Length: 88
Image (tube, rainbow, N blue to C red; front, side, top):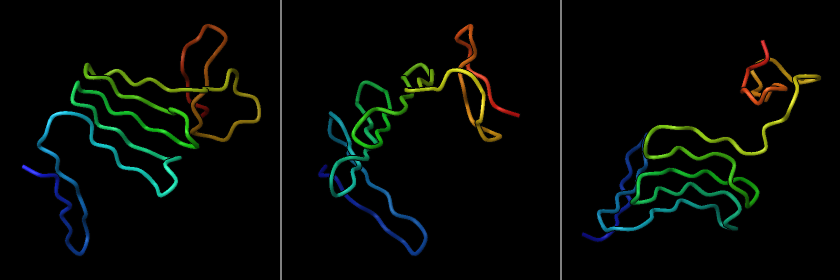
Protein backbone atom coordinates (compact mmCIF):
# COMPACT_ATOMS: atom_id res chain seq x y z
CA UNK A 1 0.00 0.00 0.00
CA UNK A 2 1.06 3.57 -0.58
CA UNK A 3 2.33 5.67 2.36
CA UNK A 4 -0.39 7.73 4.05
CA UNK A 5 -0.66 10.63 6.46
CA UNK A 6 -3.51 10.36 8.97
CA UNK A 7 -4.78 13.23 11.11
CA UNK A 8 -7.34 14.02 13.78
CA UNK A 9 -7.83 17.06 16.00
CA UNK A 10 -5.09 15.89 18.40
CA UNK A 11 -2.87 13.47 16.43
CA UNK A 12 -1.05 13.15 13.13
CA UNK A 13 0.80 10.02 12.08
CA UNK A 14 2.35 8.49 9.02
CA UNK A 15 2.11 4.89 7.87
CA UNK A 16 4.39 3.23 5.34
CA UNK A 17 3.86 -0.45 4.68
CA UNK A 18 6.56 -0.69 2.02
CA UNK A 19 10.05 -1.93 2.78
CA UNK A 20 12.77 0.61 3.40
CA UNK A 21 13.15 3.75 5.48
CA UNK A 22 10.52 6.16 6.75
CA UNK A 23 11.96 9.63 7.31
CA UNK A 24 10.29 12.58 9.01
CA UNK A 25 12.19 15.77 8.27
CA UNK A 26 12.03 19.53 8.73
CA UNK A 27 11.88 21.73 5.62
CA UNK A 28 15.68 22.12 5.49
CA UNK A 29 16.44 18.46 6.42
CA UNK A 30 18.60 19.51 9.40
CA UNK A 31 16.30 17.70 11.85
CA UNK A 32 15.18 14.16 11.04
CA UNK A 33 13.70 11.05 12.57
CA UNK A 34 14.49 7.93 10.55
CA UNK A 35 12.72 4.61 11.12
CA UNK A 36 14.68 1.96 9.24
CA UNK A 37 13.25 -1.37 8.09
CA UNK A 38 16.19 -3.14 9.79
CA UNK A 39 14.81 -2.02 13.15
CA UNK A 40 16.61 1.11 14.32
CA UNK A 41 15.30 4.63 14.95
CA UNK A 42 17.73 7.50 14.37
CA UNK A 43 17.33 11.12 15.54
CA UNK A 44 19.28 13.96 13.91
CA UNK A 45 19.61 17.59 15.02
CA UNK A 46 21.52 20.30 13.18
CA UNK A 47 22.34 17.77 10.46
CA UNK A 48 24.16 15.28 12.73
CA UNK A 49 23.04 12.10 14.47
CA UNK A 50 22.16 12.86 18.09
CA UNK A 51 20.63 9.55 19.22
CA UNK A 52 19.87 6.07 17.92
CA UNK A 53 17.73 3.28 19.33
CA UNK A 54 18.92 -0.05 17.95
CA UNK A 55 16.71 -3.01 17.10
CA UNK A 56 17.80 -4.75 20.32
CA UNK A 57 16.80 -1.75 22.48
CA UNK A 58 20.18 -0.11 23.06
CA UNK A 59 20.21 3.69 23.18
CA UNK A 60 23.27 5.39 21.69
CA UNK A 61 23.85 9.07 22.46
CA UNK A 62 26.24 11.25 20.46
CA UNK A 63 28.36 14.10 21.80
CA UNK A 64 27.80 13.45 25.50
CA UNK A 65 29.83 15.89 27.61
CA UNK A 66 32.48 14.43 29.89
CA UNK A 67 32.26 15.65 33.48
CA UNK A 68 29.37 17.31 35.28
CA UNK A 69 30.73 20.80 36.00
CA UNK A 70 28.28 23.61 35.26
CA UNK A 71 25.56 21.28 33.96
CA UNK A 72 21.89 21.74 34.81
CA UNK A 73 20.01 19.21 36.93
CA UNK A 74 18.75 16.32 34.78
CA UNK A 75 21.54 16.61 32.19
CA UNK A 76 23.20 13.38 31.02
CA UNK A 77 27.01 13.33 31.14
CA UNK A 78 29.87 10.82 30.86
CA UNK A 79 32.05 10.23 33.93
CA UNK A 80 35.83 9.64 33.79
CA UNK A 81 35.22 5.88 33.42
CA UNK A 82 32.93 6.36 30.43
CA UNK A 83 29.68 5.62 32.26
CA UNK A 84 26.62 7.76 31.58
CA UNK A 85 25.17 9.54 34.60
CA UNK A 86 22.51 12.18 35.25
CA UNK A 87 23.19 15.39 37.19
CA UNK A 88 21.10 15.35 40.39
